Image 1 (cartoon, helix red, strand yellow):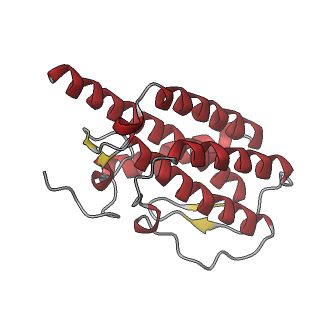
Image 2 (tube, one colour):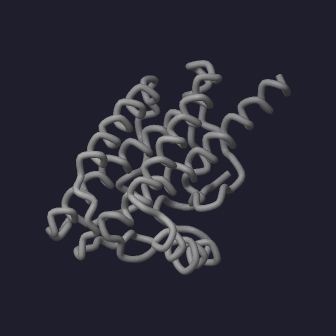
Length: 193
């Protein structure tokens, strides 16, 4: 099955829903603490999901049906690749939050292509868990001011430092659902064998 190229984007209806409904709702109802609490919950859920899968299966790429907010190219991932993507993206988001919190301009362009998984490494869950502890510590120490400086997400709108922290949760939530879909496909495959 041929998938679209990395960075091809989301279906227009999804992109508009996220941009015009989800992002404004987050701006109204979220706080720094809520975003971090929900992110930590997602990390626990992901850790539990991954612990139920053998190491070899964690590296097996499966083509899944589209999951909300996952572009076509990302449908052929392994669990380890999703975790790698979360690490790469998380490091980038942490850098953006840090820069915007200092009211500095984030000059580096953010591209979808630059955060794609490429290694499918066996230790992805260890790296993911370690990074998330670093991120939690970073957010806990960060002054909780909303920056006036912003950086645009490639698909959506300009986010300030706080909105990027809320996006960190949303992004992890979306990819947790992707992990669930991959694990479901792995189970289907085992049943068929």
